Image (cartoon, rainbow, N blue to C red; front, side, top):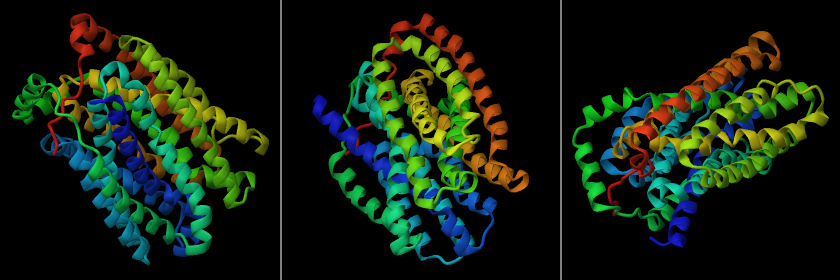
Length: 420
């Protein structure tokens, strides 16, 4: 496959995932309107975000098994169909209970998409070239959040908060067509493919082996903490700026999106760094980034003045977006075998989804009970410290694997069945 063709399909995949992130964070940009329209509490509003995470958590492990059978491309198309159905149903509902149910439906699509995209990127690029496209892909949440927060400033005043649901539904149809027509995965090396097929004939053995492998779980802990820290920013920062610092809704959405812009810089820079540092050093880099991110995350809801918010948003975005590219670049090597990458991704995404659930439940509850956004430093700090410890444990795990099979590990690429 040519380099241009690989990058073209990677870009289409990235843009497709952006729609899912926009669907997730449309609640954050319209939360004040939903609360007023439906007369619900902040905890209930937080559950509209958590519903996605709950559904994504439930689908993570079985979804990885499905992906082994039908391939990531078909999983993406199924996920697009699910996200369309969830958004249409959400736009038509008039009750909180039904809206919450549709968010569960959307969450299934979100969970499937998060698992399917990394194997597609892995299939398109060799290991030494994978860092940059993977780094750009990890910006899907930032792109989606930035897009919907700014789009909602126009859509909501003119069409109500439900207009954002219709927008995502239309975009899901558009990208279903584009993705189906343009993204075709390479067949790959025949010998490697045959080995992968043989592994897939033993699902119980594969699942057990992956679940007993510590590497994916260390990464899952990291994604869990990342979901807590960054998820609290993505879901609640616009409201925090309105409630604590007195910004109007449009200004709060725009200022919050500044971090999403600098996340683009952070993700691309990290991708370049990953291509220039030997793979066996990536786990050490991962630990260093977690130490810095922990320090930054505990102060995100404790801004003493409005003037400090914009500089902090710029810094936070760069540091925050350094974690997902490194984490996901480590995933193929953390898996026991290349054929087990889908299940390893299920474990890793399980951590992210679980963090997404607890983020909104804990954050909403903390605000309701303590009446202080600053108190969120406690759960965020605890989770980030645990992730830093897990990152430290990952270093000897990866070193042992490299020492045992230095050349085999460098070829640990996800092998994916040919998809027509």
